[in-house]
Amino acid sequence: MKKFGSGDKGETIVGKEKVKKSECLVDALGDLDELNCVLGICRSLIKDNDLDEIIKNIQTKIFEVSSIIAGFEKYKISEEDIKNIEKKIESIENSLKPLNNFIYISGSLEFTFLQYARAICRRAERSLWKLKEKRNLDDNVLIYINRLSDFLFSISRLIKERKNENYEVWK
Image 1 (spheres, rainbow, N blue to C red):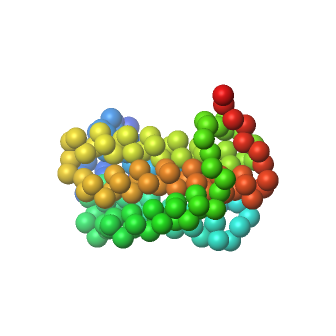
Image 2: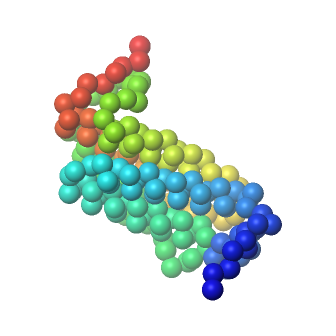
Image 3: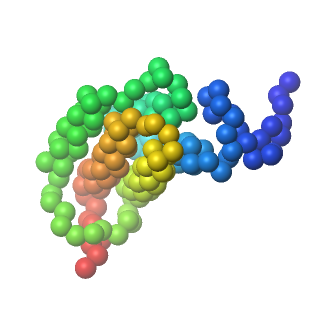
């Protein structure tokens, strides 16, 4: 039988540890969970098998990052993971028209939700930096999440160009 109300006193279990729900660890896990949810929406909207697989792989990495910060030593973000995402960013950016202005987030749902995911990723990165001040956290996790927000920006631009949508440029 499922036990309800176990978190009603402001605590939760993360890995094997009982923590207060107000701790930055719980904030970071929540931000990563929210990012993963929005990426699921993106996958539902994007009708491109290659991009769907890329985003699913990102979701897998987010599960790994969440597991790492929850204390599961089985997972690790490697320098190779970082190099792979940097290569993907370069490849996409090299195929796109240069962008020299801020842009309004508007247009297709695919573009706007990828931009929303990027913003959540930035928040998750800030949460992870706060967590690093209190706990030991591998720098590769922080670097990967930083690159991930850039990658999401690149994918959103790729979608926008594939749909032949114009950018609404802020001047």
